[in-house]
Length: 254
Ligand code: IPE
Ligand code: IPE
Ligand code: MG
Image (cartoon, rainbow, N blue to C red; front, side):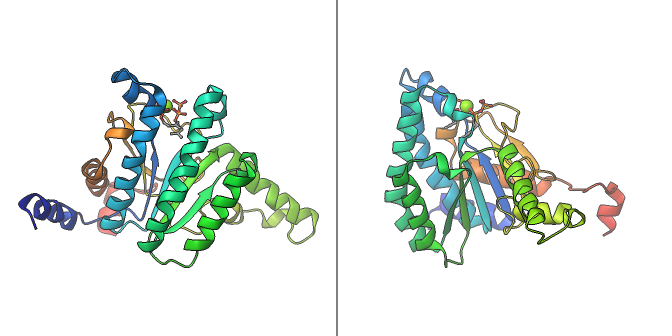
């Protein structure tokens, strides 16, 4: 092992509190390309390598679940050409990467309203999910045509349907039962939400799930994000005091 590698491993071992569930708003592809005088789509293509590095870094750190925001429900409003390149890229990456994820024991899933995607893409998604369904390693969820408001509305509709069918009553609508109907409910609570690209907003990502997540914002543009940057975010998380409404003293004495 090289000195650099052993130093990296030391950093990983020194982190005490590893987040169980990390989500990333992968932002800044367009600006990354424009800064280099290239078309925005070049940035999207370069961003694929950062996805690979993040998956690998998360797995190395022992993160249980990684959720990546790939395409928001608002991103349909982009120029048609850009949307279509993004869809093609998604399909290309699926075909190329899922086998590798499977080999590494990663369970793959896609969250969001998939009904808007072509039937070809929908089939590729369900085949990929089926292939990796029994894997016991990290869970990688890709949010595609996802919106936090859609997620909550969808969950509310599910409960309303159960009321109509008289399977439950209005009294059974609780934070827990609504939570169960939201995306990612089967995973550990979201601990850390990273946003690259320098903006300080959530852009309709995991609104329900981020209730007590720690936020980490970085100016690094997504195609420049790598294992080292991921480790920086995890290291920051390790330093945070999560109080969940309690006082600092209570947390220290617990
Ligand atoms: C994020 O990068 C990728 C998607 C939203 C699909 P952007 O394309 O938003 O890049 P910027 O923010 O314009 O630089
Ligand atoms: C958020 O980025 C969505 C994804 C990263 C997929 P945007 O670039 O769409 O967010 P806004 O429009 O700047 O809020
Ligand atoms: Mg953006």
